[in-house]
Each structure stands twice: as structure tokens, then as C-alpha cells.
Amino acid sequence: MSNSDFVTAFAPASIGNLAVGFDMLGLSIAGAGDRVSARKTKGQGVVIKEVRGMDGEIHPYLSGNSDENTASLAARSLWDAAGDGAGIELIVYKGVPLQSGMGSSAASAVAAAFAVNALLDESLPVEELLVHALAGEKFASGGLHADNVAPSLIGGLVLCPQVLLPQMISLPVPDGVSSVLLHPELQVNTAESRNRLAKGYTTDLWLAQQGYLAGFIAACAQNNVALMAECLKDVIIEPQRAESVPCFRAVQEAALKSGALGCSLSGSGPSIFALCLDNDAANLAVVMEQASRKMGYQCQSWISPLNAPGARMVD
Ligand code: HSE
Image 1 (cartoon, helix red, strand yellow):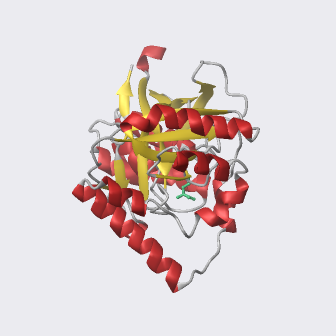
Image 2: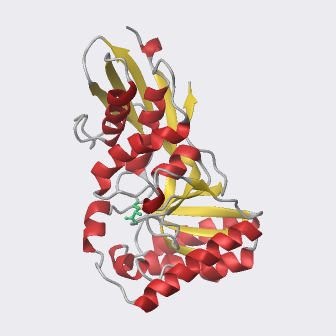
Image 3: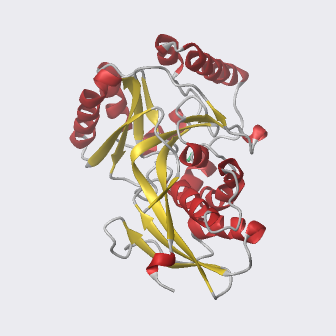
């Protein structure tokens, strides 16, 4: 067997929660993602051959333990369900920073499921890969939420409440709106962050957040950017996580002052996203980066359309 036996898939990074929809709303981004190469072997089961950075060098931190990597767990779930009993070997290329709040574990899981799907005698429809990618993602985050996996898989803005899984509902996106995603050089462990969240909430908070989510979805349907700005808020989860990202409030304030429609943590952080009018995006990225650096955190940012594509096969 040679390297030409490999098929390769790319899956993008994503913004989980999107402020207003904890665990049930997510957005794909352009320009960052993971790649997974897969091939059949004469061995048994799904194993990771190597984990590399996008530069091709062996990844300095991630181990290739196939029982602990979201890529192999997703691939195994799919191959056990639909494979032909051959072995599978994976090479994971990590482009999404670890513990970044950019859907890193989801991108690996989705890319792996997508690549292995191409090795099936009859590939499954993309939507059917969700449960397998989730089997990988669940290991990393300690909870069942599809707000990173779903947009990474099908792209765009996706509503995916746990109670409706495996349904993924693609939402229309308003014209002329972009996302800016800032990654400050910090790490937040999603499972630990989730464990620290309060277990009960008041009816007032619950009503407020439900109202914002309903308004946000209506804004998407009606192409109403003003309503979207009014609703892009998280009154429940963001206040509990803000302190774990020391530059968050400064970046948020800078973004809102510079015309952002809204700004919050991406997933469990440390990444921070803003939605804004297309024309404001470049300036907003600069302003957010400056605020992060002023607080002592080096950073990188990405600007994306709201309909950035999901997973796909690549050369
Ligand atoms: N919805 C998840 C959370 C996303 O906020 O914990 C994790 O990236």
C-alpha cells in the first residue's frame, strides 16, 4: 500500500453557541480547519498512524492513541457500523489550535468521518455522518452537543438542539453580515468549563435567553440585521465563563464600540467572536486584536462569511 491509497477530507473550525444558543447553535468559519487522511489496511480496527500539524511536522502535543482521539473515535463509530471489516489507518493534520473554543475536536471528528465515508462501498449521505462525528466529539467535551460538529459537517449557520438530534436545521443567513473570530493564545478545557456551569437557573434568565434565541432565529428568517443585533446576547453562560478569559471583556468592549452587532465567547472560549456588517469586518479584526494584545495576549483572527462551507474531500 502506498500514500496514494489515502483519501483526505477537510473540516472547518466553528463557533459554538454563537452567544444566543448554548449547545444548539453553531457557525462554520473559513480559513481554519483539520484534515484527516484515511486508507484501508490489511490490519484490524481503526488506528491513528500519525498526528501532524498543517506544516507536516509531527504534532508536539497530541498523541496518536486511537482510544482517545476524536478522529479515530468518529471513524471507528462509522466503520463499525458500515465498514467491510478491513483495517483503517488515519493521519490527522491539526490546523485548529487545541482547546481554543474553535471546535478543534469536532473538526478532527468530522474530517475523519468524512474521509472514512469515502472508503465505504456505498457512502452515506452527509447528514448520516453526524452521529458518528458526535461519538468522537462526546469523548472530548464530556457532553452531547452538536453545535460544533453540525456546522463543521454541513457548513453555514446551523440549529441543532439536543432534543431534535440527529436533525440539523440550516438557517438562512442575513445579507451583508460576516463573522470575526479571534483566538487569544490561551487554552480552556471544554469538559472542565462545562462541569463548572451552574446546574439550575431562574425563570427570568430562562425567559430572557429563550426570547433572544427566538428573536435571533426570526431575524435570520426575516433578513433583519437590527433584530439580530438586539438578540445576539448570552445572559446565562457568558457571565459564568467570562473570567476564564482575562482579555474577553476588553475585546468585547472594543468590538461593540467599533460597530459589532454582538460579541461573545466562541464555545467555551478562549476564542471570542463578533458578528458585524461585511464592511466593518477588517477594522473589527484589527481592533479586537489590539485589545487582546494590550491585555498581554498574542492572537490571531479570521474573517468569514456566514455561509462558509462545511466538510469536503481535498487532494
Ligand atoms: N456548546 C459547547 C459549550 C461548545 O459551550 O460547552 C464547546 O466548544
